[in-house]
Amino acid sequence: MKAPKPRDVLTGRTLDMRLRATAATVLTALVLLAAGCARSDHSVLSPAGPAARRLADLGWPVLLLFLGVSAAMWILIPWAALRRRGTLDEHSPIDAGGGLTWVWIGGLVIPAVVLGAVLVVTLRTLASFPVHGDHPDSALRIRVVGHQWWWEVQYMAGDPRGPVTTANEIHVPAGRPVELELVSNDVIHSFWVPALHGKLDLLPGEVNRLRLQADRPGVYRGQCAEFCGLQHANMKIVVFADSDEDFRAWLARERGPARVTTTAEAQQGEQLFTSGRCGGCHTVRGSPALGQLGPDLTHVASRQTIAAGALPNDTADLAAWITHAQSLKPGGLMPDLPQFTGKELRALVAYLQQLR
Ligand code: CUA
Picture 1 (cartoon, rainbow, N blue to C red):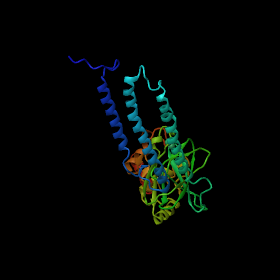
Picture 2: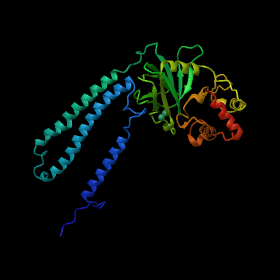
Picture 3: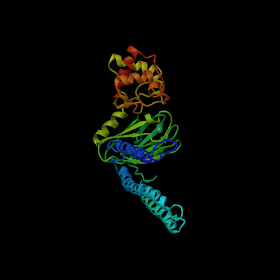
Picture 4: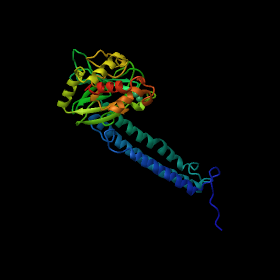
């Protein structure tokens, strides 16, 4: 009769069962990891500007090096474990002195060489990024202010009328460097548009600078990358790289005041917006609404999303956001306004939708 295989005291599983379970776990993890490698407009694997490319040129060799080291360890550890079984008691290689050399080589020399090389290439990449003072005066300056949980975007180009303010979407001219000044209004946030640049924190009371450049016109998605409270995940940012001509036209449009309302419904909406609570928090330039707490809505209809990417900018979602913001993005400053229903709610939405 065959002897039963030894089983683990706690789980009752044999060695075969444990090996199969481990292999299944590792395979599942690899499949899940690989799923994150899809090329997209929101990926470090598709660098679309000089800064992201420098980081990719550093990241790929380091990743391959670490995969090599990991593979060597995955082979050596089981090999050492199985080999030790036969020699443990009397002739342990470490006790015999011969193994000690390998402890020095494997434990100190090889890690020092590998990590030393990584340190050198990392410092070289770091040194290639512009530092404070490197920035040409002629470059377009954009101030990005982090709020819980949205992004204020101000175009600082020397205009006596002051900066052009928008929110959650940054338009830049493709192929030209743009200087971003990052600050925070409350807690620490982090600006991260992976296809264009590495992360950089937005700190209260401090200005961090970042040079952004997109090679080609396109849409590049990003996300706040520093946990900043309840709605950290709903703090998305989108960079639109436009052709020079499109960018100039966009900026000129943004600079202008809100469009004059023409339909009776939109006029009723404007009345509700400016006389009610909305104008206390939001600015619509050219109207009596001059609130500073929430995003500038002067041209809100030209944006693709609302609530920092939490919702698409369409009729149903605008209405839902006005009445149930606290269910859709709990903890944000935007209150529920259930007093707006039916005709009034439709009028408010009609007003916002013509703010192009
Ligand atoms: Cu802002 Cu996370």
